[in-house]
Image 1 (tube, rainbow, N blue to C red):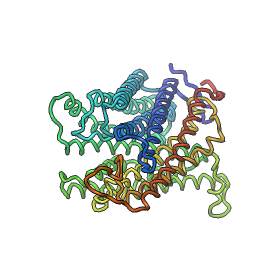
Image 2: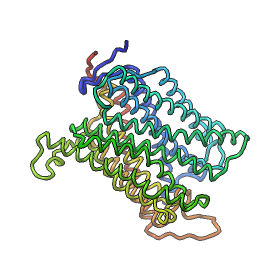
Image 3: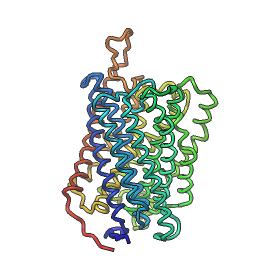
Length: 504
């Protein structure tokens, strides 16, 4: 019989195995964030042309390391922790098969370790996309496969835990909205990881000298993994929005049917947005491009707009029910702005919705995509969505996971209170400046935008130097915010004061 413990704050029953699995995945996610953050600073100081820190080989190597650690390892390890939390903890249930969970975690760690080793030793300077015919060592592709298999096993285990909770009647009625959103993320994860298997297994064989991989087919199938993996983030992020709203001010879900319908729209249509990476490719017909970036894709945009309205509306209603009813904005003025969970929530919604959302929809237009695709406008977009949006939501919920799961008080709380502000302001400056630089045609991923020793001469507007300097300053501010988060998290987990607990 599982001996649960009870959180003294929320009253939730926590399975010790779920507890341990959440801790393990969260710790590895933080390590990946640290590696990705350090590499980000070095890449930034190289893209800042006035500094131009690194030689070309190390620039591309660290750009690969940055992409894999931030977009894959940090995000997915954290999302695995979210699945255990949303499945077992929120439903007061045990984990269906803990040994399977630990096996999956070991596969993910082993795969990530293999990838890190190949990247740092210069055996996989292929960037995040690893486009064929660029070839890495077979160990790189094998590491990706092992990592993906481990993540897929965790998603299956999440669904098995839902079945256990239903059979053992650990909750009443429908699953909570947060769990429903996590299930949405898990479904998208299965689709995404299926694309990964479909392309990385033949690419692994190709790296061994067995068979061949068509470059155009690779790009099409790979983006079913590369872009759709960020759609897992969107579903998980929105789920955390609802969770943080409830934890911070007791927000109310205005209409659960509408919110659940919006999550279903994600499952049906959000993966179609992957096509915007292929709109400049000559191998796809105009009809294919139009279908994948027209009204069907906008149904996923509609889903995000629904969440973008219902979460703030639920916050407002929650505040008004608490008595903050003087005037139109008393509820907003009296909100707990010093709570890092709440400020992270608000900044995540604003930056993701406005900066990330507007730029993302425009890239789905073929005419604009042709102009913008290989410029800094694209990383400007996904730094507003994945970094400012998803990471801020993850940071915000961490401040509640630390006392609930790790049973420690948040250390350096005055620093924790300002951390979301520092990170959000830095990322806003960084992503907007990067997007603006892209409008001048500044290329993405390029080591030297002055094209020294090239057989042609390219002169950018003089304002580009200023814009990139602003981008550099914003990036460094965001790095300070990320550093504060890591300091607070690590110190709280390993050296923080314990929180009193109640045995169940």
